[in-house]
Length: 102
Length: 170
Image 1 (cartoon, helix red, strand yellow):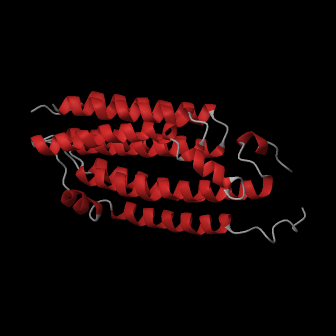
Image 2: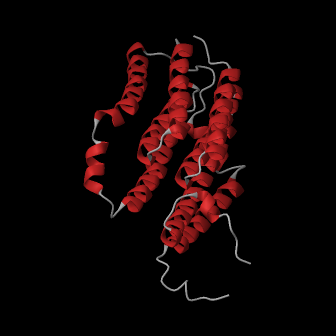
Image 3: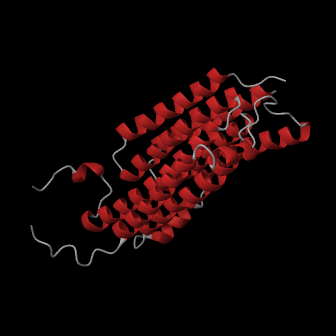
C-alpha cells in the first residue's frame, strides 16, 4: 500500500499548466484560447487537490470547488463574448480584434 | 499498484492535453479535452478526493464542456453541415479519444476488481468538505454565488442578439 507522492501530483499539475499556457500563447482561434484556459484552471485545481490530499485536509477540495465556480462563470461570459464576436466580425481570430476605436 | 494507475492516468492526461492544443478542428480538440478532464478526475480519485472527482466529471466534463459543444455547433450552423457530419463519423477522428477513454475505464475496472484501497491515510470525505464549506468558508460560498449570478447576467447580456447596438454612434 503506497500512496502517491506529492511531488508527482504537483509535477503533473505543473506540466498541465504549462501546456495550457503554451496553448494560450500559440493558438489564435479564440475557442482554443478558452479551452487552454480551462486546462490551466484544471491544473490549478489539481495542485490544490494534491496539497489537500497530502495533509488530509478538506481545504484543498473547497478551493477546487471555488475554482470550478470561477471556471463556470468564466466560460459563460467568455462564450457569450465569442458569440458576439462572431456575430459582429464573422471571425474567431483573436488578432482580428487588435484595433481599438477611441 | 497505485503508482502504476497514477502513471497511466497522468500519461493519458498529458497526452490528451497536448492533443487539445495541437488539433485544428475545434470538435476534435473538445473530445480530447473531455478525455483530459476525465483523466484528471481519475487522478483526483487516486488522491482520495472522491467528492472532487465526482464534481470534476459532472461539472467540468459534463456541464462546462456541453457549453463549449453548444457554442461550436451554433457557430458551425449554415455551412455544409452534412459533409461535416460525415467527416466527423470517420474512425480517424474519434479513435484517439476512444482509446484513451478505454485506458481510463480499464484502470477503473482493474481498481474495482482488485479492490485497490486507494490512499488509505489521506481520504478526505465529502462530509468534512461540507462541514468546512458551511463553517469557516461560508463567506467564500456567498461570494461564489454572487460570482455565478454576475456570470449569468453577463452571459445573458452578451449573448443577446445585437439588434439595437449598431445604431449607437460615438
